[in-house]
Length: 387
Image 1 (tube, rainbow, N blue to C red):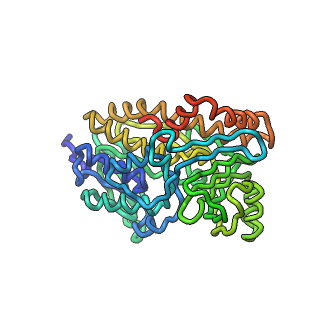
Image 2: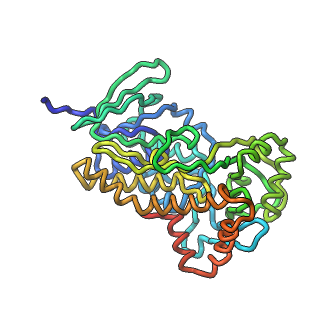
Image 3: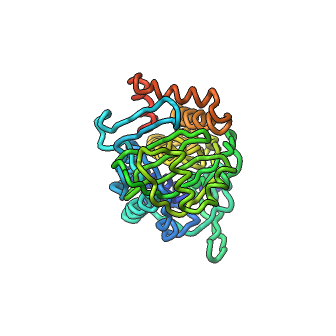
């Protein structure tokens, strides 16, 4: 049989932050730009119009710096205040405790994508848009991708040595994976303003129905409020004044009064994870693990996937061995991060209000500041993970 000369060495399905960071890191590891291609179903304009708020850890900043996609337009988090509403227990983490300029950052999706796209353009790596992957056929010595162009519906094909699935979507749109749990919770997201903002301080407030996060962003806060579906329906139906009142009651008065909220959006929450690789394909980011947003670890875990995969592929010539080595190296970080977020989410999603599990979590928060090594271990995991 004649040897197949593949169109590219590496095809990345999904040109979000994880996919683009991976492409740049691969290029820096020595892969030729013309031998890497990304496919995405959105146009560049659609990606740059996405105003969703994303929490980035300090470790993710380091990865984006390595990829040549920093600085970005973002608001720094210098402190994180974690508490349980109406109960004993709180913890305060400060960047100064770890000699860092920030614990993390809050940025809009479009502001993360723009410097990545600029770096991709300068590198010469191709992004093919808008194309949908309709089939992935793995052969012994290559992978054949079937693509559908969004506007013309024309079908084309490309062969690649390795295919990386980096397009995960959201929990409500995904096929069920090995680790799957519907928390029966809905996240309500919005941008809110208060009359007593504390610069640089983020809040994670545990209510009886789930976590309520306020992340400093621009002139206010990015809100992520996790509640049960019936409560979400009620909150989404309220007018702005009534919604502000409900938010005030749930969060309290640490930031004074809520004076303004943007339009509200919502999405269902669940765990959907499966670490998988064949001889020539592998999934990373949300395509490998979709998490509850309780600790803001989704994109951060995906970026850690990207830097480890780039390093592993550069170090090993055999694709199958490299992908299995990647899975082994990522196992500890993935399992620990999933366990932390899943345990915290289940304490509220699967337990009655005021349950023992919720009380135990509150007690843990109350003692965390007293046990410095445990607090540092948790902070290190949230900021850096294992990479």
